Amino acid sequence: MNAQILRQLSGAVFDFVRWLDFYGETSQDHQDFYANEIGRRAKALYYRSPVLGKLAVAPMVLCEALFPETRFLFYPRSRLPIADAHYAMGFALLFQTTRREEYYGRAVHFLEVLKETRCPGYRHYAWGYPFHWQTRGGLIRSGTPLITTTPYCYEAFESVFRIDAKAEWREIMYSTAEHVLNDYRDVSAGPNAATCTYTPLGGDGVVNASAYRASLLTKAGLEFGEGRYLEAARQNLSFVLDRQQEDGSWFYAMDGSRDFIDHFHTCFVLKALAKIEGLTGHEGCRRAIERGIAFYLGNLFDEQGLPKPFARAPRLTVYRNELYDCAECINLGVLLRGRFAELDQRVDGLVKELLAHWQRPDGSFRSRRLFFGWDNVPMHRWGQSQMFRALCFLLYREGNHEPVTGSSQLRD
Image (cartoon, rainbow, N blue to C red; front, side):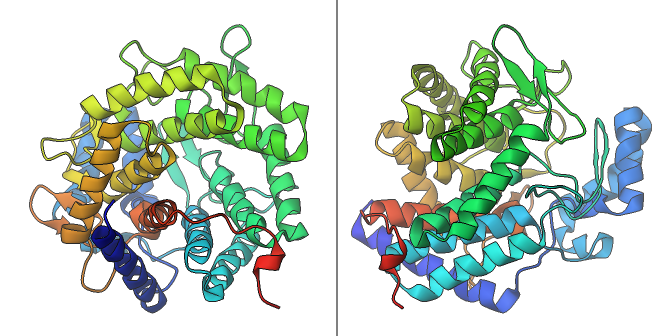
């Protein structure tokens, strides 16, 4: 990446920080149309009776496609731990890039928020959604831990611990790992393989959920010298590797119904494998990544070379491109930087596109390119925080900065 693009990238990140200061840390969310009782009932009907359900959800789909700014009429702005975790990681990276202690302070601020927003009623640290979430499998109530959220919070505490070596952060990491090991059920999925549940209450068979758990427990197992973590991680990893399709893809779930293939869940699986491979040199991960990237590049980008939502869609899509997909493309691309020339080119081209057309004058990013116009409603969980973290990650890596480690790097 040339010096001019790096300067533009740096400017974009600082513009975003100024926007975040002005806008605040709560926002509308992707789920707002279905987060209230009426929306949840309509969505539940859709899952039970698709014909009647389509009529019930039609007003929400219409608003999402044509009037996205109406989200506030359905549900108020909220704070989501997954976004706070990404902001913590982004500011930690920005501190390591700039050595400006204000960004270290911002990272710590988001950790303090995460301490306050952990799920109540659980012995160990865990995080989920602040709203009731209607899914195909039933209602997941507010405050239920999610294996797709909690690993980001672990990584947020880890990212700051690598800077200041504060014992409290490591204790929370350990508590989080204990939750991830003990509060989710493993369901046998063949010899030496298991799929974990999505929440402590159930929901097995989701591929990215097992990938998240395998990645976190591998990291924690090596960090804390815990063989228990590594054994559980090994079984979940085997499930993920065994469920890769012949073409290199992964279905969302192995339940016979949720067999769609989308962009960001594919990225989640590949990122988890890349992290495990980086820590352990696992040969199976390497092979799966190579096959997965071949599918990813060939099937999850549109004619303009931009991330597209689905390779195999479960329903009608009301948008062309999504910020969340773009952010996860960059996160994956930075993790694998230098290994796949075409992926590097796609990431570089995407960054140019984002800086030219997606960042708004106030510093925020457009959320979606619709079939007609844009969705400009900023949603911290649905792309803003992930994009901030992704761009900080890219800026850090491209700047060739050495990691900042230990409290000696901070002035008294």
